[in-house]
Length: 290
Image (cartoon, rainbow, N blue to C red; front, side):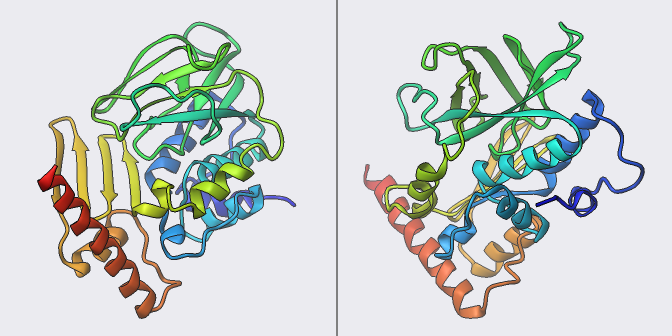
């Protein structure tokens, strides 16, 4: 099944002229627009109706005005890049959350992408790390070469992975929502993410089932809504507050992240808020007594 390139580019706000051939500049524009306009979010999971990760379903989700997490976002973006003529490849990766004492390796809890054959600062036909599925990850593609890279308030590190031999390690900034991820060097086999998606979208142990998580990367920083805590990351650091009013909470979803929940009824929205608020009060009580 083909992809509606024109509709996808409209979603990204990049439908203002002829579609150029693959280049670093075009890849950067696409990446930057995607992270800014298509939010990282798990609201369908919280509403009890998780979406599948088949490439056409992922694209449809983006075109419908929603977002998703890495399997949806990077899956859809890979589909777009391939349709635009980029040499894009999918890799098993594993995100190390802030609560993990050590890298998890390329476990498959994350889908990472690389784009090949475009010039980098070191090679005329190099490789780029492309990832629009991290929430507060890079705003622009990164040359897949060991080093440190600054983008807005964030500083990233790339190097060889000790947890995924032959692969790569991405280190996030201390301001980030996770520590880093490890990526396998080889290609991800077909169906590699199906079981992990089932776990992440349905298991009571999954962070996506336990809490609302919505993030958006801007050139100057990032916005994050985790449960009832809204944070904005800028060059001045992280500023946040507890959102105690459902009106404000839904307004943040709509105005900051573009998520209007137009396909839900009042009862579903009320249940979503009640669940989120209850989890927040339990978490705050645990934090006070810890």
